[in-house]
Image 1 (cartoon, rainbow, N blue to C red):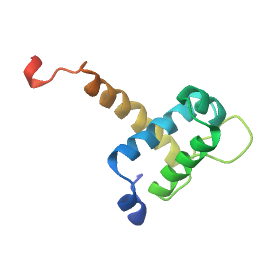
Image 2 (cartoon, rainbow, N blue to C red; image 1 turned 120 degrees about the vertical axis):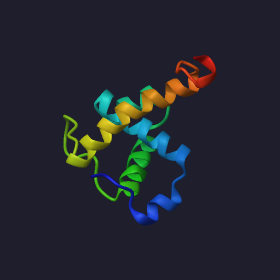
Image 3 (cartoon, rainbow, N blue to C red; image 1 turned 90 degrees about the vertical axis):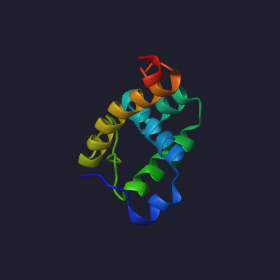
Image 4 (cartoon, one colour; image 1 turned 45 degrees about the horizontal axis):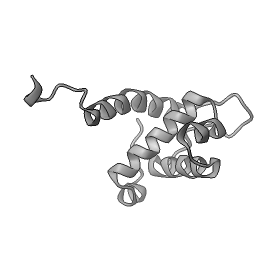
Length: 104
């Protein structure tokens, strides 16, 4: 089970973790760091740095560092499943598309 590394969890705020998960999701869905950078409107080194920060946070590699195609580690697969479920719900909550108690 994927869980935060002790020291990294203290250094990374909740908003930062969401940004790191968004970047990771984009890497996986676009097939690589360069394509993710274009999709996110940032540089490829920024995407690489964010991936490294997320891996430091969990204390484990999430991607195999090998030639294409992109290959997730077991922990990377777990992180992807979580991010693919959580992030759309989180984004919907902040866009006003989720039923809140006031809207029911």
